[in-house]
Length: 239
Ligand code: SAM
Image 1 (tube, rainbow, N blue to C red):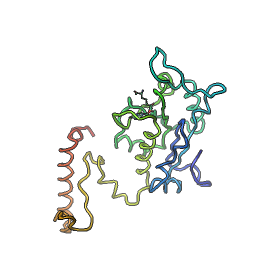
Image 2 (cartoon, protein in one colour):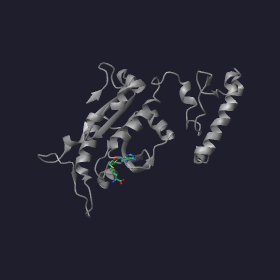
Image 3 (cartoon, rainbow, N blue to C red):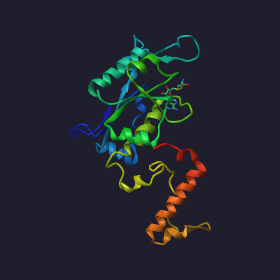
Image 4 (cartoon, protein in one colour):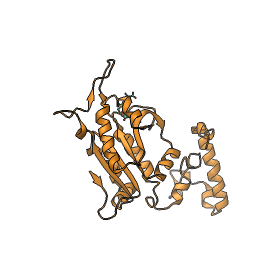
């Protein structure tokens, strides 16, 4: 299933997802700004059913773990056949395998990926995929956090959403990206809107002053304070 408008050619950022559950897509990627950008051809989404490459009459995609133990493991021959098919049309895209063992997905990695042409993303199920296919096809393992999901589809959606919103033209104002959490190694400063006073809580006076220099200084100080309190590890992270 491919989602891009006819006549526009290949859009600038391409996501190709290998999954046993293509019906989960576009799901949340089909709404709001990211969904509008999909409809507008600013990025494309193609899903590939892994079972189409399964073995035998039952199109088996998994088997018991070598050495014993619980669960099932996705077969390397099946996964490789699916990857090779996608690479026939998209040979240059990086191959990512969503996995709790992978490198953590950070805003920096998201930016690197969104600067590229897109990604082929393998969503695992069961106990994951046979180690040999990860090595043989040079897949980079990427984790979205230190917890275990039942499948890689939600993780793939998280990665795609984070990348696509950085694709030029997807967000309305470029400004909204500049001061976001993580963009300058800090969490974002607190945000306020109307009404000026709500349930006895006032908007900080400085934000109503109209003094842009003072506002910028206050925001920077607040961003540093919040980062120090909540995520001191970010302050020691190398750029
Ligand atoms: N047995 C695996 C382990 O302990 O590392 C977990 C397998 S998990 C039940 C099934 C699939 O969900 C994985 O192959 C992976 O694609 C996906 N997945 C689960 N947690 C993830 C995470 N934190 N980040 C990215 N993908 C994840």
